[in-house]
Length: 224
Image: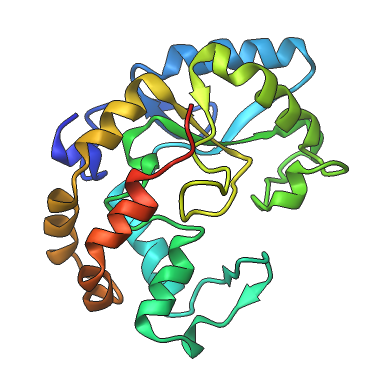
C-alpha cells in the first residue's frame, strides 16, 4: 500500500458498498461477503457500523474529542472531561478509544466495526460499547459467533485490551492478510510527516510523544 493509502488520504484502494453506506479494500469485499453469508445462515445479519474512514473524517473525530465537542469515555467506559487534563494526558485518553488521523486501521479498508442489524429495531445502530457485546447485550450472539468463526474468513480482533494501549473493542475486526502488511508499512516517520502538516488539535503534545504513541497504539496489537 502507498503512504497515501496507509494514512487515509486516498480512496484508490477501496470499493464503495452502497448497501452499507461504506467502503472496503477491494480485496476484503469477497471475504467479508462470505463471512456475512455464513453469519446469515446462523440467523445473524452482520453489517459494518463503520468500515473505511478517510483521513479528514478521522481528523474531525480527533479534533472534536480533543476540544470537548465530542464525548470521550474514560477507561471505565464512563464520561470523561478532557478539558480538565493536561495536553499529554488528553492525547493519551483519546488514544485509548480513537486512533490518530493517519494511524487508524480503518484507513486501510481492512477493518470493520461489526454488529447484528437484526438484533435491534430498524434504523437503530450500535453505540459501540462493550456492554452491547457482553452476555445479555443485543450483540452478544453475534460476538460469540465471530469469536468462533471470524478467523476462518481471515478476520481477527486487533484490540482485546491485552497488548495494545487501545481498550478492548469486541466490535472491531480486521482482515489479517492485508492489515498485517499495512501495519508493518506504516512507520513512525510517515505518520510524523502527515501529522506535522495537518490542522491537528494538540499537535505539539502528539508530535512530542509520536515514537511512543506509534509503538503503543499503532504497532502493538493483539495477535491473530
